Amino acid sequence: MITASDPWQGHDSTVLFPLLIGGAATLVAITVYLCSRLTRQARLRFTPSRTFRDVSLAAVAAGIALYLWGCLHVLFLEDQEQAEECERRRPEGVPALVGRRGDFIPLRLVCESSNGRDYSVIIPDYVNPSIAVLMVLALLSAAASGIFRRKRLTTQRRKG
Image 1 (tube, rainbow, N blue to C red):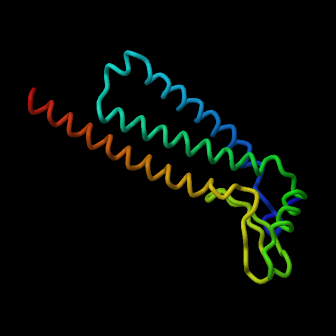
Image 2 (image 1 turned 180 degrees about the horizontal axis):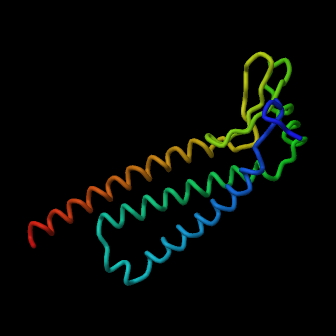
Image 3 (image 1 turned 90 degrees about the vertical axis):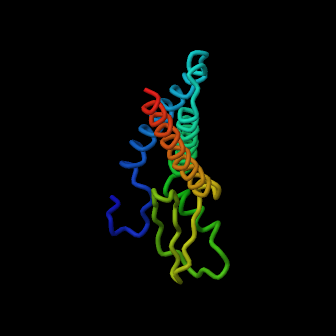
């Protein structure tokens, strides 16, 4: 049994499995919605605010997909394989490993060394930076969508 004080704990499976299931369901829902935006009727109702909203949702979907991809790397490796990966990737000058921990934000598996030089393994290096860029794009697009919507509503009120 793994306890909170166990220095060799990875990602908690009671969090990982619901995260994978919920993330997959959310990804499917966003993808279905975005595909519905490609219909002829939806394209006829084109506005800048709707376009930026859809760009924001596409960035969120891509970020979720990358996060799930990283989680799958963790899911398919047993504790022993994770420990072997820590040993295999141990940088020169790191005397001994004293623990392993799994973080969900940012997604990483950290190998802890006795001299304080911790390092990450298993999760591809591109996952976390890509997610950060996609979330910034999503926020900027959502803000632009709100600005364009507000501008359109203000213009309609002045005309009406």
